[in-house]
Length: 621
Image 1 (cartoon, rainbow, N blue to C red):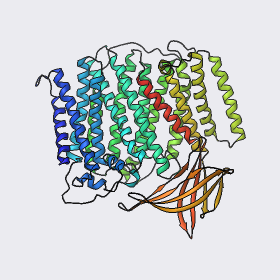
Image 2 (image 1 turned 60 degrees about the vertical axis):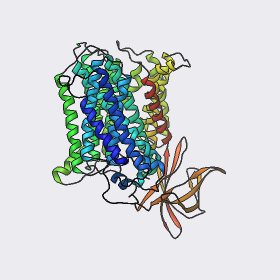
Image 3 (image 1 turned 120 degrees about the vertical axis):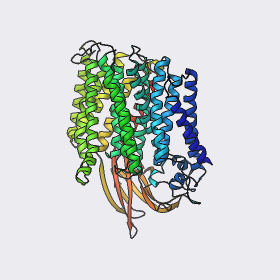
Image 4 (image 1 turned 135 degrees about the horizontal axis):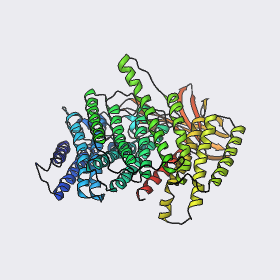
C-alpha cells in the first residue's frame, strides 16, 4: 500500500510539473495558479520520498528496494539512511531536492514575476527530466514478486552516522547548483538590465557551495576513521567528482563578488553557473553508470548510465546553446590593473578552472583508455599531487592579499605592514624547516597557510574597529573564511607529509611506546551489537603516569551480508592523532598498525570555519 502511495505521488508530481511548462498560447495559466500547482508538485514529491522512508522504517519487504537494501535488525538511523543508501532512493532524494529548491525560491525571491517564473520553469524542466528517469529506469516502488520475511541488508560500510548525513549534505550542494543554473539561463533569456539576479545567484551559490563543502568534509571524515587507510583523502574517482563542482563553485562565488556591471564578468558568471551543474550531472552519470570502480559508487546498469548521459547532454547542451546565442546587453569595460582586486580574482578564477580540468583529465583518462584499448589503468595520488597542488599554489598566495587590494588602483593599503609580517614569518618557517626534517612541500605548505592566516588577521586589525556585533562579523567574513583556509592548509600539509607509520606485534598486557605515549593492550573481546559482532581491542593511552584516554580499534562482522569491516581506533588530540588498525592474530599475538597523524584536527577546524563563514555570507548584501 505504501509503495502505491509513493509511486502515485511521484507520477502526480510529474504530471503537475508538466502542466506548468505548457506555453501560455495553449494554457493561459494565471500567476497565482502557476505557484499553487508548482508548490503542490513539491508537496507530492515529498510525500513520495517520505513513503519510501516509511517503507524502510517499517521494514516493508514487499517493496523490492527495501528488500534489497534493508533488514529488520538494523538500528533506526540506518533504516532511515537506507532510503538514500542505494541507487533508486538516492535519485529520488536528488529529485525531491530539485523541487524543494524551486519551492523555496518561489517564496524567497523578490524578483519580478516574469523573471521568477522563467527561473521556476527551467528548474521545473530539470525536475521533469529527472522524474522521468526515476519512473522509467530507477523506480524505487517496485513490488516484490514473492513474499519474504527478511531483507538482504544495507552495505556495512554505509552503516555509519557520518555517512548517514553525508549524502543529503552532498546532494544539497549538487542540486543547489540546479537553481544557480536556472538563474543563469533565465538571466540570458530575459536579457534585461535588472541586476537583482546577480544578488540571488550569489546567495544560492553560497548556499550550494557551503552544503557541498560540508558534504565533502563529512565524507572525508568518514573515510578517515571507517576505511582504515590512515588518511582522509585518497583521490578516489568519486572524491574527485565532488571536488570539481566545489572548485568551480568557489570560482563562481568569487566572480559574483567581483562583478560591477561588466558584460564580460556577467557572461563568465553564467558560464560558471552552467558548468557547476553540468559537472554535478556528469558526476552522477559516472557514479550511477558503474563505469567507475569506487567504494562510493552505486549501480552498474548500462541503461541507467545512458539515460543520465542523455540528461547530461540535454542540460549542458541547452545551457551552453543559450549561452552562445544570448548575451548581456551592458558594455562596461573591465577595470584591469596590474595588482588590483579584479585582476587578482580573474587570475584566481583561471587557476581554479585549470585545476578542475586537470582533475577531470585524471578522472576520465583511465575510462577513455579502457574503452579504446580494453586495458585498465589507474591514475592516483602522485599525478594529482604533482599537478593540482602546484596549480592551486599561486591562487592561495593571491587569496592572502586579494581582500586588501583596491578596485580602482594598484596600491595596497599599509603595504609595509604586510611585507614585515611576511618576512618575519618566512624567517620563522625557515628556522623551523632547518631544525626539523626538511621537506620542500612541508616548508611551502606551512609558509602558505601561516601567511594566509596572519595576513587575514592583520587585515582585520588594520581595516576594522572591533565591535561585538553581527554586522562586524559580516564585514570581516571574507577574512574569516580565508583564515579557515589557512588553518586547513596547515592541517593538510602536516598530516600528509609528516605522518609516521609503525607496525607492532603485541599480546594482551603488553605495552608499546609511541612518541612519548605508552599504549597498553588491555584486552581483546567480542561484543555483540544489534546487527553485527565486533571484535574490539582496548588500548589505554598514558602520558607519563597519567591516563589520557583509550583507543578502540575493531573488526566488525555483519552476518546478514557476510562482510567484515575494519574500524580504526583514534585518540584525538589538538596537535596529533594516534590512529590504530587491528590486524590478524596468531597464537595470542596481534599485529597492530599505528599512524601518527599530526595536526589533523586543523583540517576539521578549518573546514568548520569555512562552513560557518559560508552561512554568514548568505546574510551579507
